Image (tube, rainbow, N blue to C red; front, side, top):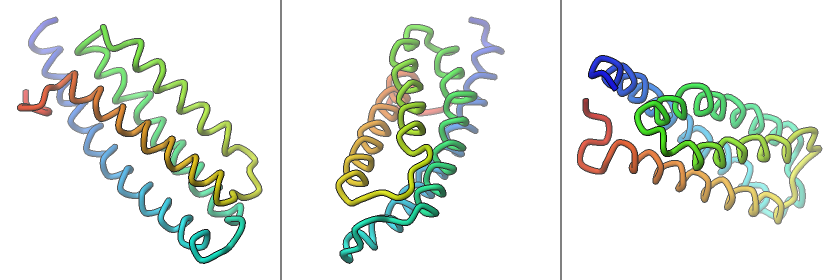
Length: 138
């Protein structure tokens, strides 16, 4: 790969990672907002909160699928298989939330755990591509 192409991919990757990290913070805040009434004993979270979560996840997944993952794949084509798995999970999360009229505590806890596992695997993939010592230097 040419130096110019790799530099361009790294630049795009830096921007995508910054946006993704910001979105992760917003998603964690929204998950906490959803969890609060469940902890207080509410049996089902309202559909509007679930719809907000679905919309936020959709925007986040679009960033990853359209920008972050292609940049990672461009830098290291061998990560194509793990990227496909993560991208497929994006669709599964959205399908799970599509048309939901609410979310009970158990379903929410399963979703939150699955999202956390998914995020950890994305971070591991990112680290494997860009390295530990120079996360996005270039």
